[in-house]
Image 1 (tube, one colour):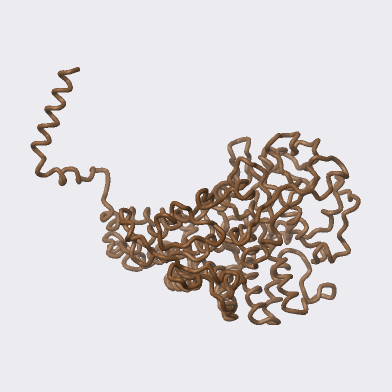
Image 2 (cartoon, helix red, strand yellow):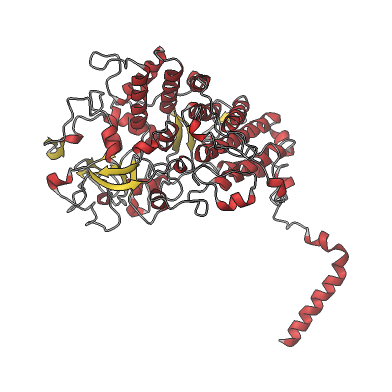
Length: 596
């Protein structure tokens, strides 16, 4: 062993002497199977792979328990498991030193990657030789769109953010080089809006590669995606949280200037309305309707029918099979834990198009026999979207491991209660049915025909409601408000405003209430409600105790509203997430969000 060590040392010494003068050059050599970053941007394939990696930063909203909090921390869903991060958020176990659901660095990494791509793709020899400048311009527009979208995602979670600019910050940059302050929310909006406009001017109308559309290209950036993101962002910017919010007069940047504007601007609503109308006027999208004319199938098909006419911005790669499994009852082999709150159940209209508080059809006493199954009258005569979205006690379900349709029991003595499983049970007595691929089979590893469906992040139905809301604030009484609200209701299979029994809301305030109600129902479980209740500044009123049926009982005693959980909201802290202490320590010019 000693001789071996000596021999090895001799070899090392010899190599050191031979190459000491050229050590750096020797060590800087690149292995034959790798290419440098400069070479990446001279080749078509590696450049496209780099761009594909930027797309990977688009959030997968199908995971709503450890990666995204937008459902379980609102008033529409309670996620049953205390083992998941969403539980910590609901009990207030969050702060700068425990920044759960932290996406600050994640999005900035996406922004840096997009900027690097924009700054290096020009002059790509292989692309220029094969496709000319047009494809480079399109790829740059895609990267520009993605960068703007990541800024928007930062803004909706953290409020005003740091605008880095057009020069990427090196990975080994000094601390001094990274000292940038937060920009005002309005400045952020103006910058992102401008970037989206620049991208939209170049992006194709349909996902394509050098003008050739194909299924392979589905999910890539289009003009519709850029304009839809802009429309949603401008709607948020016009809303009470950001438009003349004097509650945040003391929320200032390191330069002492307010980060949230203090003066209400009606024109922001006009900008939001115009942006939504621009998406509509593209003429590229239509509300999805099932060929059968069944409104339940139409509403389900928005999400289950791949790449349909209503979908604007989809995430092609996603974890929807796991979403399916979390939402399915144990009877179907699922994990039985994404529980719809009673508050959300009560939000659905009756089949006459009226809220339960205004409809003579609503009853909380007695039962009705439906195909031989006794259904509590609370669930009778509800609108089609309710039946497409909620699994309730004695609702018929078929999917997963269930080979035939059967009623689902949430009674304490049933298979979907805590007696059936000590941890996997809905605490509310309901489960989400919307966007659940019933062909996903947990028993065979989550396989199923609906497993590979895209995740819809933006769709035309939301754009219609964005347009109606913004127009009602800017120009109350405009005929387009009722027109686009009624288009949503017509597809949903409920009576439209303007009929004998359902008059047009007589005032701007009444119409605002109806639009808010419609958004809650139409856009339920789409990661929108969390942001709506904050931008409207009603979160403090609607958060807190959430209710369900009494899962400790059978029979009549089950159907009693019971507090099942508390979704903590602390003002002002809960309006935006905290920036982690780690990032605060590195970024001396960045001020922390209020309340943290």
